[in-house]
Image (cartoon, rainbow, N blue to C red; front, side, top):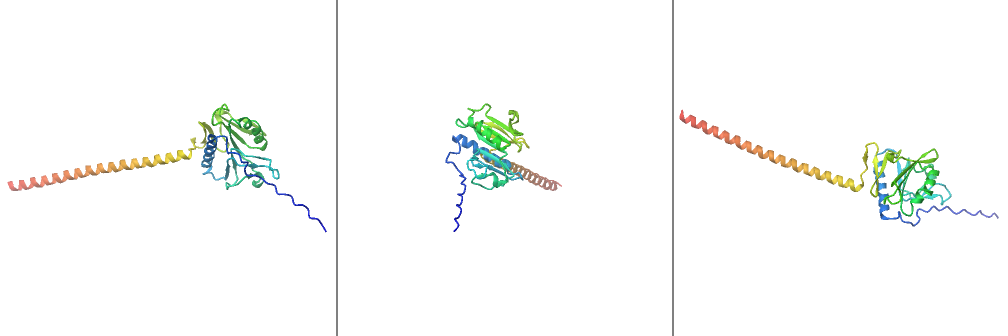
Length: 245
């Protein structure tokens, strides 16, 4: 009687580590605003782009320790449907083209050391580190791009991505700029405010047009009344002339 070979236990890839999304609420907000700006920037692009924030990226099948959870990552060419984790081997070997980390008191050294080395060795094309508090990095935004297999610092006056956007600090927010138009990508709140202002401006224009139309009507009515008065006066003068004849 043959003895069945023991079945290997399936590899478990956790989708979370029980840790908070970021060190402070300020850092969480910076991550959310950046993620939304990237969504809005890529929305009109034809190529699929997968965006994720604080999500595990596993790059080696069978080894759940080979993982990292970037604050924000951008993976072009990958369908944007939701995932619990990102597995490179399930996506044709895809790796993020751009990774962002929000530096904090507890992370900034690691962001510029171990994570820097890790993203470099994994082939992440561009790596940006942003310090929302402006306390740990000088300057507060630093960018790196692969040259061969090694990162090189992106000049401060050229903090752009090969994906078509630029980045610049605005207080505690990392602002995205569309390089094609030179225009900053508004936050969702700014977009709502702009839409409301446009609605109010349209209302004001409509009210001004209504008032102008009313003034024109009053002017027309006045002119019509004056014409009628003059016509009546002419008729009266005609009658008087006829009587005199």
